[in-house]
Length: 160
Image 1 (cartoon, rainbow, N blue to C red):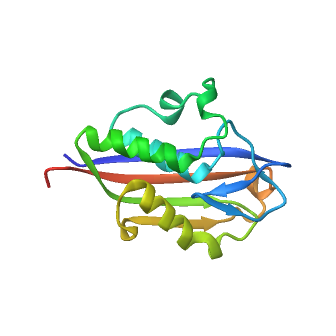
Image 2 (image 1 turned 45 degrees about the vertical axis):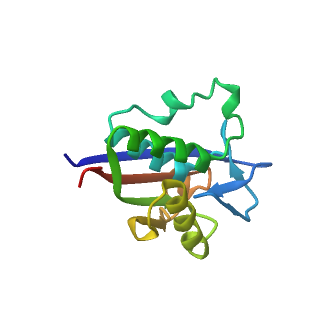
């Protein structure tokens, strides 16, 4: 049985933090605030994978009340999510994701994000899509208060 999952995440922009998206440290005056590295792209992808496998979400698996995850590298957490998804009998068919940020421009970093995510997922880069958009100055992302990401994934049974 094929399974489809959807994930969404948002983090506030703050001074004194790194801007990590898809495991890429992107030069910017602000970074994302969160318990881990606050990589909204990785978080949305993990939630899509967990949702497709009916395994809850990253807040359940890696709670922010647990100090082990303070400053955690989200791509390392992603490898654990993928391990659990495979243990449940599924393989990643594909992942499609979108980051919504007014600034900085993300196009120069998309390929590295895809490579990082593919490596963390143990799959081919051809199965990983990352897109970036703005909200034309509207909403909290348009006002540069935060960055959001969405992701969908298709899981296939390992027996295919």
